[in-house]
Image (cartoon, rainbow, N blue to C red):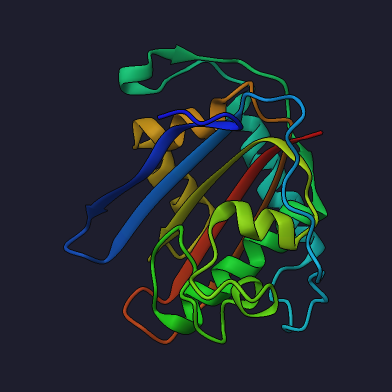
Length: 207
């Protein structure tokens, strides 16, 4: 599905396992117009939420992601991929991932679209009138991009479990192993519902 500014390579795909105790989904957008930039945001994330992610955890996330990318692996229908170059940590991608994991956890809402509630900070402060899309959250975090992708998960209680769930899915594996991306940010937030933890992993290549 193409427009003049971007190609949507993968829409949202939901995969359910573990009797409803875990789930994962992904989205990827590759920009095909070099003149394209994401919409400039009027607000910036100001870390209004108390962060549950430490610098040590950020390092753990990045180390694990780059270990995965350093090996040749099968991504199912996409064939063998990698090894590929390691990713750099992006605070802007982390901000967007954190905002979305917070929204999902607080709203008990699992989707690449934000809840549209007061927990969906990008939607509220940008006055969208609907749940935020991935591109909206990139704009809100002031991330100017050429390629972006997102893996989300719910119900996994460790970094290893979240990564394993993504690697069992061809599409999520493809995001993790994609040469289109050069940066990453990853976050999670605890919830009081049956899933207990919501994860967001944002990939990007900046302008």
